[in-house]
Length: 85
Image (cartoon, rainbow, N blue to C red; front, top):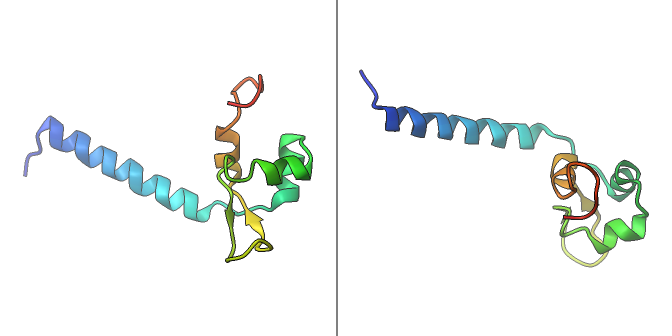
């Protein structure tokens, strides 16, 4: 079986997507305090920006706890820590 260059590129893209999905599933979830400490920000700041940081609630209602993946939080910051993107 021989694959064309386009087919190989498509296959490579699918493999990268699958690996990224697996990595995200294996990345631990952290809470507001851990995000605040990691980002050197206050807990109220994390709550105010939770959705922008990629956070999600573990359940319905206003008191459901927030959880985050630090890789997603990090992606929201300027690489040089020059500020909020």
